[in-house]
Image 1 (tube, rainbow, N blue to C red):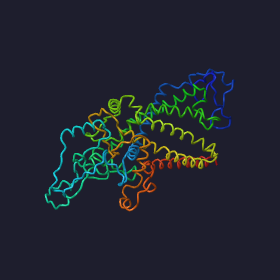
Image 2: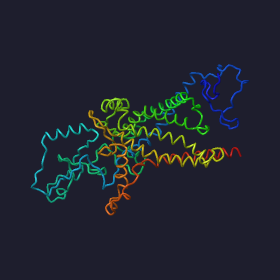
Image 3: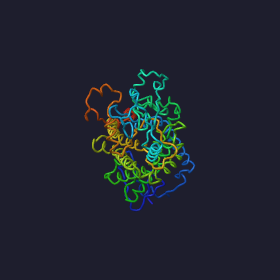
Image 4: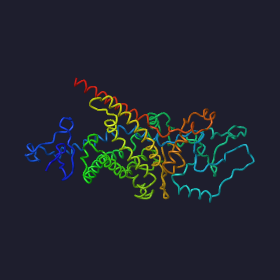
Length: 476
């Protein structure tokens, strides 16, 4: 039985075509002739020791765990940047139902109206039924509101505060420190490093919060690395395609192999999507013992199944469409990059390594521009809990999220563009200029974390360029 010399334990299926590269391409070994295949295929010297294979597997999993641990602080901070609500002051959504009721002390003769118990019970039932839409009621936490003065001429008595129908002071803005919950950090405005710093300084968070979801991410990465190639090879065997280990750039017709590659990534991404959901919620939830909803990944999986509709709610919820799109577009862009450089731009990695790396940098940046907004919308939808059977604890986030949930991908994209387009700190400029679609709408809110990913791509570009220059110098 003929075989592939690069894979000694994989025999060729009968009737399956295999690609045979040229003799002088320097990439693959030559096809053996009948003279040098007279010896038995399986020899004791060619067999890999099972202990050595197990040792290599353990080393690989440990190395993957270390790499996920190193990148975990940046991933956590990036996720917080993506899910936090950073609106402009003129279009900020503050509650599920807006109200114009304010606390006005000028009307001394007016007596405060208090709701009866029945109305309060009905409101509690409503918010229990819509757990993700609830907003926390805050008392006046500002020091100026708790002073003991009784002077009616004090400006405090004339200060107007937004309240709900029951008289509770509501949070007027995510930038208002007086009504910010103690378990939430200040808005992250500059980037990933500021998010890491504020997590470190926040009570009940600290350095351990930089590794939230790291174990779940490690399980996801290991599972994906084992499942995706296996499924891709199975699909190639079903349709009698070329070997899945052959790069697409060496194939004459890349369409079928590219289809099985994308399909395998899509199926594996769909199967492992609960791990991504758990990872996002573990990273975003507050680490405070009083506010923490999920104790760990397994407890999170159990809680989500119990509260959000079982397995059907776990897979076929509002996160289904963004999950399918993300796991289709991302592998498609990643695997067509070498094809575009080689066949469209006509750049060879051997002849022009610097130019090849530069083209790869440009296409990788284009990939970020396309996939980052989709990833942002997907993570925001993952933080929304839609259930009619809420548990004992609500899902409290360490950053401020939008109090009104998104209805879907389109609503999330439009709301982010309209509400989080400009810089939230420019209050004076917002008061002077006119509201316009061209001045207020912006894609800025969809690209939180863009600088971090571009920086990593630039670093890889310089490393590849230096490596190519060293190879050229050695050949010279």
